[in-house]
Length: 86
Image 1: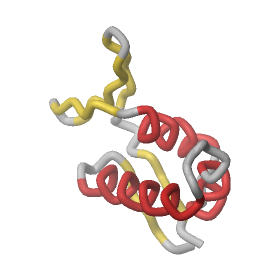
Image 2: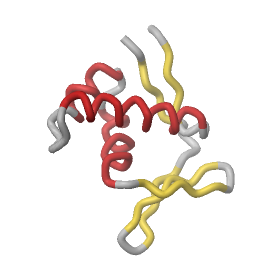
Image 3: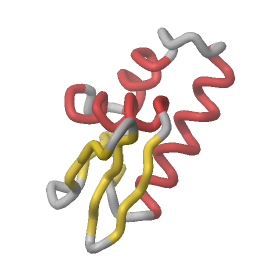
Image 4: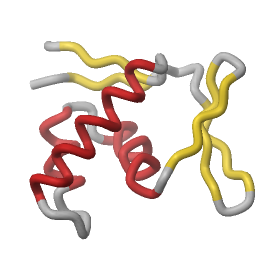
């Protein structure tokens, strides 16, 4: 199981109707799915738990898994979180 750890230096802020993650002078705008993933990472530290949680969205399971993997990979690439095997 993959363990997910959010970067403690990342700040989530709202501006108007949009949410952003702020890190190292950069701002990353979140769509609704990415925002839900970010908020869920705080409570669900393992990717399997996060996958099960996100599968309850209105997306199909396969689409949700693909979008979840893409979102987590982008967060990791930007230094917003890290993933590791326990």
